[in-house]
Length: 204
Image (cartoon, rainbow, N blue to C red):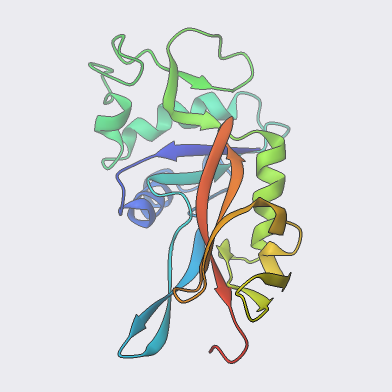
């Protein structure tokens, strides 16, 4: 099962690296950032780079069948990670997430209870997790690669492959010159609009 850990925007990979360095996978399977391929147009040329699909979120995979209560254990262990201490209320719990002396619970975790649910650490719904896995298409680095698309003379998308293969009906905006589309997908229980890179014929 996947969980998300909220961190500072722009510091997602640093947070994931800090979690691995401090906790060393003790109560989770892996920690990662879901990123997307996109392009910059520089001096008329397209330059490929990657950006987080969900700014300020780090993902952790937990297998509760191996260790019962692993989600709650990870939540409390995260307070030992310097980059997350302030967000989670610190080791002592003062002023922590949830606003009640750091007594925040793990939102969405089994047995967590309704009180003091934390937006800093919460479960990803199974359907959302499956959708994101399909979009990543097994990429070991969880990078959603640019989707090849074919368009007509009016700029309408006739066909899409890659991550967009099954999700063209979710496109709500397209910017062909900037090589991205905006799709609406469920995330943490609500609809989110995210940019996804596209590749036209002839693109690098």
